[in-house]
Length: 391
Ligand code: PLP
Image (cartoon, rainbow, N blue to C red; front, side, top):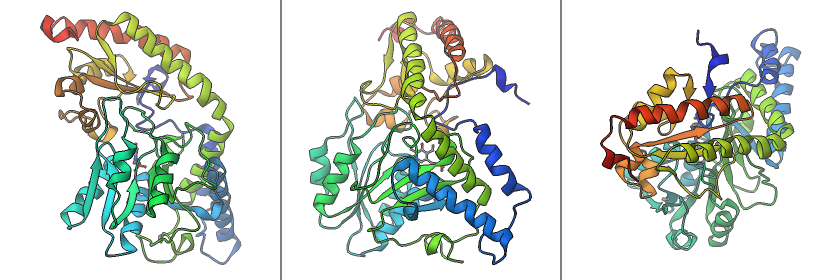
C-alpha cells in the first residue's frame, strides 16, 4: 500500500480524493440498499428516491432543473452522447465546430466523425490559450449541427468565454455543448436561462467516485439517446443505474456547493504561492497560457532544458504527484497536443508539467513542493547542455 499521508498530491485535474462524506453517503447502496431502482417494491423505491435526490443535488450545483440531468458512466460518455445526439437530428447537418485543445473524449469522436465522411472545424488557439471568437462565428455553416467548446482546459486550466460562445451559437441557430468536466465544482456555473444546450461533468474531478458522470440536456433541446434498452433515465440513457456512484456524485456536488468559497480563496492561494516561489527559485521557468483567465487550481509550467518525464519520475520518488500532459497520455513521449496547438515548440512542450490543486491540499503540501521541485530541476539541469537551459 502507498502511504498516502506522505504524498503531496498535485494532480487533481487527473482525479481527486473521495470526500469522506461521499463514501458515507454511498455505503448503504453498496450494502443493504441493493434494490433495483426500477423494481416495484420498497427496496427498489429506496434506490429510486436516492437517485432523484442526487439529481437535485447535481442540478443545484450547476443551476438547472433536476429533470435536465441525465446520469452517465463518465464524462467521456456524456461528451460522446451530446455529440451523437446533435448529429442524429438532421442527416443534412453533419458539421461540428470545436477547438484544437479539447479532451480526447471530444477530439477522438470528432476524428472518427471525419473518418465517416462527416465534417469538423478544429479552431486554432493562440499562445495564451485563447480562441478568436470572430473565427468561431465565421466557422459556423448552414450544415453545422453543433459547436462544442470546453469550459476549462484540463492541461492548462485556461477558461473559454462559454456564455459568449453559447450566445453566438444561439444567434446562428446551432446547438452548443460544453465539456465542463474540469470546471464544475471549481468555478460557479448557472445554467438557468443560459444558451447552453448540453454540458458534461464527471464525479471523480470533484471528490466523487470514478465511473459516473452526467449530461445536462436543456429542457427545450431535442435529444436522442446513445444507449437504448430498458428506458432508464426517462428513456434518455438505458442501463440499470449505478446507484451508489450516482448517490456519490450527488453528495460530491452538495459538498462542492458548500465548499465553493474555499475553492475560490484557499485553492488559488496555494497555487499562486507555489508558482511565485518556483518562479523566484528556478531560473528560466515559464508559465504556459494566460494567467488571468484560468481555473483557480491549475498551473502549467515549462522547466526549460529538462525533460518533463524525468522531472515527473524524480518527483514521484520524492512523493510529489503531478502530470506531464493529460492523465490519459502519461507515459507517452509525444509532446502535449494542447501545448503544441498553442504554438509552443516541441522542446518546450516536452519540458512542461501541470500542477493542479484541490481543497484537500494543505499549506504543508505547498511547502514540501517548494522544497523538492527546485532541487530536482537543479539536479537534472546539471546534466543538460547550458544552451538548453537558457530560455
Ligand atoms: N473532459 C475533460 C476536460 C477531462 O479532463 C476528462 C478527464 O480527464 C474527461 C472529459 C473525461 O472524463 P471521465 O474521466 O469521467 O471519462
